[in-house]
Amino acid sequence: MGFDEKDFLACCGSSKFAIEMASASPFKTLQDAVTTARDIWFNKVDVNGWLEAFQAHPQIGKSPSPNHKSETSAQWSKGEQTTALATATGSSLLELSDWNAKYIQKFGFVFLICASGRSTSEILTELKKRYPNRPIIEFENAAQEQMKITELRLAKLFSTKAEAASRHDQQPMALAKKAEDRVSIIGAHLSAVSQEPADRTSQISSRTRPPITTHVLDVSRGSPAVGMDVKLEMWMNTESRPSFDGTDIGSWVKQGFSTTDKDGRSGQLMSIVDSVNPGIYRISFNTGKYCPGGFFPYVSLVFEIRETQKSEHFHVPLLFSPFSFTTYRGS
Image (cartoon, rainbow, N blue to C red; front, side):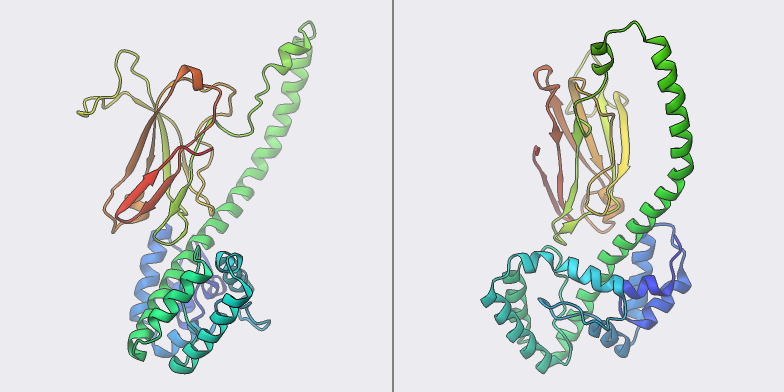
């Protein structure tokens, strides 16, 4: 995907970083962009560039200044502090402000931390923990936190661009679909005049979402996992059940495929129907592509829907980090 300097400046407030990233653009994947961003930030941006990026951030607990260089960055900063502000009290905000002032006085730049998903108490604890550090150590810590923020914002940038492209691509399809729907509606009325009203209404699903859904939370970042590929499969061998010894290869049939959005939610993995087919299902997550340096090349969650449960909803999320994961049946 292609972006300009303004886009990358919203991700990181260093002008050098934005210029280098725009020069390297377009990127085929988010991971390509992240890999390039890391190289530029740690190997090409100098000390002045790091400080320029640090200065683009408001203090934790405070809103960006009106003259902020990027409106998008200001909006993202506000969103990233949502959890902190939601968990704050008057006294904790005052304490955070006091510690921020002490930090700036000692180090010369704002306390920088990837605040997404962190509470005020967590941020305060980390600030107090890092305050005794030597300036050279804290300068490196701030640079590492800036990279975490940059990666998070690159994911948002890619997600926003993908959504915009999808809307643009779907416009002509939507017009054609409307025309097709009009023809279908007319044909249905002509061919079904003699049918009872109940016959027509019985075909309309009472559900508002597919029977099986999922989302992914990156617990190592405290934020949704954006851009992770997800696949839903069903066990189709009626003569046996999936075996522990792995001899069942070839009996899994794909039901749907999607990629998680900015909220970590997958797209529609199956049709919206009143009754899901009972059986054994498997949701697989491409964690290796999302986190190349992690321990898991992929994660698969296998579960069974029984005959008595076919009208229920099954939300099977993944809570993931590079070296651990868990799941549960949600609602």
